[in-house]
Length: 443
Image 1: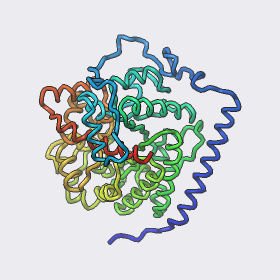
Image 2 (image 1 turned 30 degrees about the vertical axis):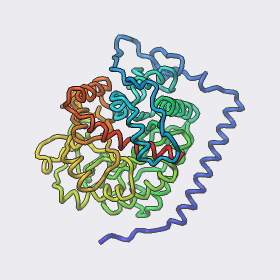
Image 3 (image 1 turned 60 degrees about the horizontal axis):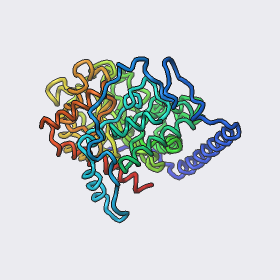
Image 4 (image 1 turned 45 degrees about the vertical axis):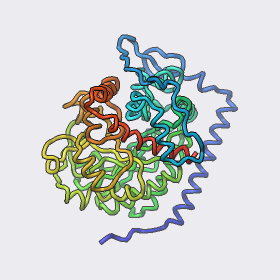
């Protein structure tokens, strides 16, 4: 029987509005102070480490010979799509129009979400200048994920993300996903940086322990507000893992708890908070990391459950998120031998992505892999193999391959050789464009 949760939604909404007002005041005061000081951040960016700089805040590698070139994704449509023909077109027609205007190379590029370093081939990036623009025009990836080292302060981040957004709209006619891991608590690229002066909402384990899902909603509002202010549109959160193994330290503080229904309620509440601030949520790590003991960053993590056991526990929060309309679900590097029959990671398994996530749970949004540079993948597959296998398994977007050059070339080559069909690529790009067209409608 579903347990009754505390409900104080009205109080939470009022608190959320007060918190957002406070955030706006702080940001305004900071901006006034920066302007009065006469500073120009675009002219005062320094080197954040060793090596040279390109002059636009992008740090260069010491050896140009280390750079690798990709087959150009510009294609014959190098000027990009002109976008929707009229405001009155349906979203479906807009998606089909955009898709028809893209080359194969552009479509394949849209299936990747990479760091700015992987895009530019620089060791460290803190700006989106001419180098970023030129590389994006060659390889128009679907999204860019930013790490703590890319984020210096609020003004620098706003400028960098605004430039990135403009490049995508000008070249392709639609937005680029600008993402970050901002769960709150121990995983907070922005809130843990004092230069941003924003509230860290704390670990989700503490919010879950309260039993009050309105606090999860408030956390979503708070995180969503400062992410939107900075220019992000995607947060790789919330964590939907049910912490059922007390020996699991990977998600111990990141999970809302060990009660599957409570986790579901917290996850859906936080997603509502994100949505109200125009932030896309990406729940993770499907089909559930909470019962494992290993860390998939370092090697394979095994889930010793069958499908029925997953349906009765781990999948409950994901099902709730799907019913809430979550746009992204991140699939983890988890082996499920009792379901798959072998130790293939879930992210490379058609049985998991198509059989369970698509067909069993009915999800038709964007399936994104967990980072493909983790040990659970790199210990067994090269970047091209992993990328092609993930697409074959049903993934729509490939996050942070160890070698973007190799992974991109692997998928493109597989299509050109007929190992992957153009129809399979179009299937994923349609899902990506559906979300991006929805973002354009909101704007």
